[in-house]
Length: 266
Image (cartoon, rainbow, N blue to C red; front, side, top):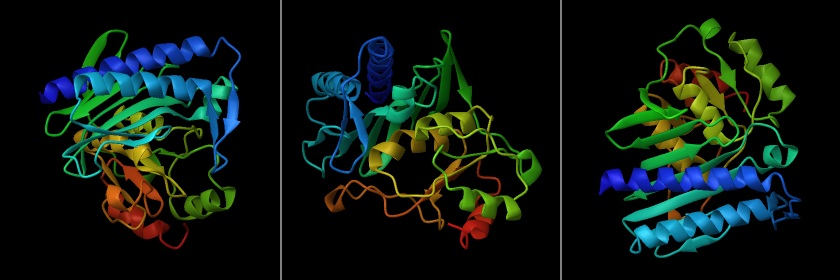
């Protein structure tokens, strides 16, 4: 059954990704949600497709998605946590930096996850205790984060809206190279597991659907994903769907050191 979780999520993510790329060729319907975040008809179509697929295969599981909220009991043993289109701004701009993210919580902790990058074709999947895999052009291989531990050899990546003042503060204390900023938590974690980056810092709180899939993918590849003060990420569905603070992801080699450095910056 565990392998079925990943197999189904992979197929749904790939199909949703293909549909998102098709919809890019049409006139998108753009709206603002109550929190002023951008949403399109593509977000909603991908959401409907993924929810229907998960419900068909796992009728007893609960499903939480960005666009539709919770369907089922929050205290269910298995809760799917889905962002059907992470990085909507990049998607609308027709540039890389968006993904489909399907995570599965078991007992309140990330258990399985899939991230699909429709723009470049990368597919990442992980299952607790089974490692992380990267697929591209039909080839699926197991991947691990780098072992780099010297700051000057550890690329850092952030989102495109990362404040310049915070970037300056970090640069003054951590002499690491900076990769070009890009949207989507899943895309940035993909860079870490492919050893294209070693540090990722987010300056604001994000929702559970932003981290559920990327967290298990990073951890099964040997990395670390925590709050910016070092506390482990938690998924208390009875208390809401948003994390209480910024997050930091890394290859794990200097995670505690980096946390200590940024405490006075973020």
